[in-house]
Amino acid sequence: MLGRHLEFIRERQYVMDVSPATIRWYPSALKWLDTEAPTQEELTRLVVKMRERGLKATGCNAATRAINAYLHWSSGAKGKCGGGCRHPHVKPMKEPEFVPSVFTDDQIKKLVRFSGRRFFERRTTSAHSHSARHGMQGQRSHRAEGHRRRYGQSSADAASRAGDEMGRGTALHDVKRLCRRLGFEPPARTLHSFRHYSECQLLPGKFVLALFSGNLIHTESA
Image (cartoon, rainbow, N blue to C red; front, top):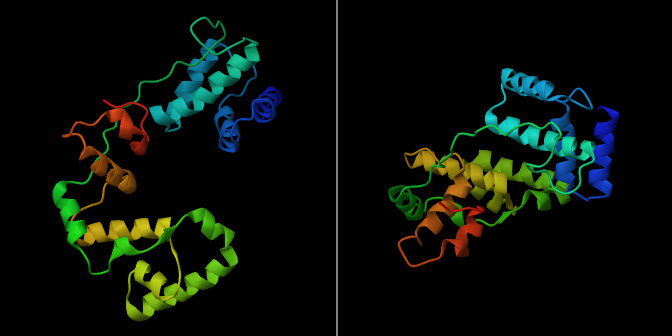
């Protein structure tokens, strides 16, 4: 990585105190920029190279946001980057509109009526809590796997019988497996689809969108 790129990242990390995730993201984005002071023509060729390497519009925009932040910092301009800035920058690409698929009423009814394995009554824990107990978790997972193979159980039942707590990834896997067992393919963003379905039930009533848009993790509601 070039010297100015490293200087930019260090200032963002120690002066502006940006999040660790952002710091990890900067090197991945700035690797596309092979010069410290690109011209506008070079930035145009950079976008072409991204697309030729297979990046979609969303991936290009994710990288160019970091590149534009670097270019604004490198120019020495004060304040936020805007229309008055004279430094080269990459224009954002138009991204395709994404309309997420959600569960239908009939699919939700099938899930609610299902009680064979009682998938939705199992306690789940976050991946972080499992990481904190990695050593013990390895032994518990081994016991749960033994129960699953011996009794032909779902991972949820096996974890319960072994005295284990089921992680988020395992729960999500079982929910998707249950959907297919009931005769339909789960939406791509399964957990988010549950939230969409739950909150959209409020739309026929007299509710203000802003009251529950945060639960959908959206800043805008159409």
